[in-house]
Image (cartoon, protein in one colour):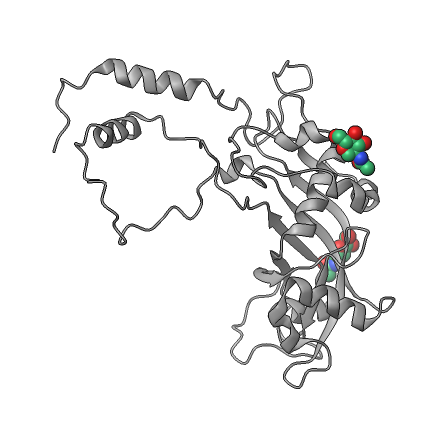
Length: 288
Ligand SMILES: *[C@@H]1O[C@H](CO)[C@@H](O)[C@H](O)[C@H]1NC(C)=O
Ligand SMILES: *[C@@H]1O[C@H](CO)[C@@H](O)[C@H](O)[C@H]1NC(C)=O
């Protein structure tokens, strides 16, 4: 059913005013110039490092990016059977399991030597790990569309005019990202991979399997795949804490990243760790 012009426009204004109470971001993908006055205090790079170390500790998955070696340079572990020609220098990014088994902020991986990621590493590639904070709870109030169509469809639903008849409809996929991901922290750690020789395999296995129970099938020494524990030696950290008018966006010095203690990252919280949070907040900055 089409909306008629008799829809009271005052409701539209009310909805817009309600949306307006959550002040929209002025700088989204960069920080404002230092000279400008912002209503928010932007966290320091160190405060951001503490949040990042908490994300690393709590987030089991990430994307690992490597670079393919020049053609025919596949070394000890060869290439996939049907690897196409011409991939030399191409980036390759793939999900992998991440753990945080050491205290200094260098992530731990269980490298499987048949994985393309670790073939590239054996062939000399550097590596980067990207992780993003995923809140376990959706916000109580989320950023909503304030476009006219958004408002009209919400109004139409509210007035019973829309296609949503209110019945449970399993055919409607639920919103799998029920929050503003652009306003949440994420980072990329850049560095190289090295084998962990100075921590016992038993301790690493225990730490890794605690986070990834299924990984017990491919621990070092398993009968299926050759595997080993490795660390990403972090050399550079790029951080996007959320919208740039309220979160730090930029590089974090590696000594800051490495010196964050467990006590410090356990002492902060990230948006949405508890129920009843509202978007637009960098709650955690106030906790530091
Ligand atoms: C890895 O990164 C370093 C900079 O940290 C660079 O000097 C080196 O050439 C890179 N290695 C490869 C294979 O690209
Ligand atoms: C933990 O947080 C509180 C409150 O924000 C702060 O006063 C305290 O110094 C923090 N402790 C550590 C170890 O960071």
